Length: 320
Length: 281
Image 1 (cartoon, helix red, strand yellow):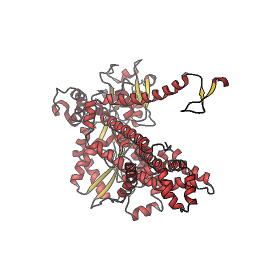
Image 2: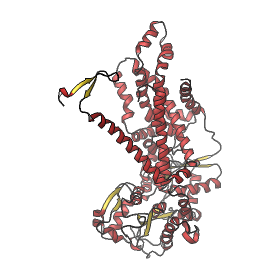
Image 3: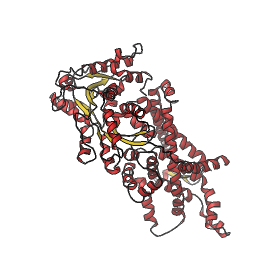
Image 4: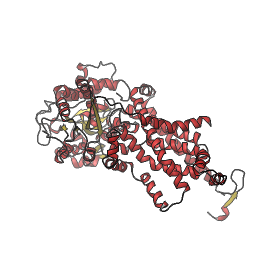
C-alpha cells in the first residue's frame, strides 16, 4: 500500500507543482498565424527562416480546417496573419472587417493545381477526365458544401459534360481533401481529383496523372494580415517574406504552382498547359523515384520535389 | 421463457443468483466479450502490420513523438489536478449532504458530461474573454490564446463534471456507518473526513483520478475549436493524429494512434491495479 500512497500523493502534488511553474517570457514578439491545415509543411519551413531572420520572433500557428477560422477570429479577436486554403474564407474575413486590404493577384504566394489520383498501379486505367464517366469506375467526390475540392469536382466534370455519369460512379463522399486521398490510397475508390499538394504527400501509395490542360484548374492560396494584430509592422514583414520569391520556392517544393499561366474566369488553364508542364512532369517523376530506391534523389531525377521524395523514402509509411 | 426454466443456483460462488437452464446463454455472453476483444485486437494488429516493425522502430525513438507525448501527459495531469480540487469536495458534498435543490444541482453538474466537447470549446471562447476570467488571467499574466494554458482549460472543462461524478461514486462506496461511529466517538467532521472517509475512499479516488486523466488525454474536439494546432506547442497526441492525417503522414498517424492505445491500456490497467475493489469504474 505504501507504493500506492506515494502514487496518490504524486498524482495530486505534481500537477499543482507544475501549475506553479510560470513560463519564462523574455523579450520576444509572439504572433499568431491562422492557417489551413494543408499549408502546414510549407509554413513550417518558412517559420525556420523567419525565426532566424527576426530574432525574438515566436510564430505560433493555429492549424485547423479553413472553415473554423472565422468563428475563431470573431470570438477570440486574436491573430496577426491569416492563410486559409480557400479564398472564400478570406473574403468572409475581409467582409467582416478582420482582414486588412487583400489583393487576389498580389497577395497569393502560390496556386493549387488539380491532378487526377488513382491507387498505386492505376487498376481502372484512368488517363483522362472522360474516363471518370466509364461505367464501373469507382469515384470519390468531395462534398461541395464541406470542402473546396468538392466544388472543383463539380466544376471540372460539368465543364467536361460528364457530371451526371460521374455522380452515378460515385462511391464515396468526402468532407475534406484528406478523406478523398485516403479513399484512393486505401483502394476504396479507383480515382479522384485532388490538389497536387495533396497528391505529393502519398507518392508511394498513389499514382498521379496530370489533367488535360483545358480541364486543369488552379486556385490561389490567399494571405492577409489581420486587423486584430498586436504587431502590425511585424505582420506586414512576415507577409512580405511569404510573398517573396524565396518563400515561393518553398511552396513550390511542396508541389504548389507559382506561375499557372493565363487562366479563364473559372480558374481553368488557357495556355495549353505550357506554364505548368514542368510542374506536372516532376510530379509524375517523383512518384517513380519515391518507389525505386535504386534511383538517386536529386534535382535531375525529381526536380523541385527532392525534399518530399527524400522524406517519403526514409520509411515505408510517410513520416517527416 | 417459462418460469420452470428458471431456477435459483445455490453454489458458494453465486448464492441466490437466478440461473437460466438455457445452457448456451453464459457461453453466448462470454463469446460477446471475446468477439469485442478480438475486434480490438484485430484493429490494433492490422494497424501495427500496416506500419511494419521497421517503421515502428524508426518512429518510436524520435523526439517528435515524445514532445507530443509529454505535452499530453503534462497538460492532462494539470487538468486532472484541477478537476480533483473541485471534484473531491463536490463529490463528497453530493454523496453525503442533503440540501435544497440537490437534484437540480446534480443534474446541472452532470451537464458537461452530456454536452459535446465541441460545444464546451465554443463556450470557452466566451468565458476567457469575459469578466472575471479575463481580468484574472491578465493579473496573473496567464494568456489563454492558442497555448498550453488553453489545452489545460479545455481538458479541465470537459473532465471536471466527470470527475465530480466519479468522486461521488467513490464516496458512495464508503459505508457511512464508519463515519457515524467516528462522530459518535467525538471526532469532528473534518477529522472524520481526514482519518476515516478519505483513507477508505482512497483507492476509488486514485482510480477516478486515472480515469479522469485518461479522458483528458483523449480530448480533441474542444481543442480543435478553442485552441488549434501549433506544432509541438498545442498538438497533444489526438490533435497530432488529425494534423498528420491531413498532411498524409500515415506513418506518424498510425504511430501516434498506437501510442494513444498503449496509454489507454496502461491507464485502465492502473485503474484495476490501484483501484482494487473500488467500484467507480
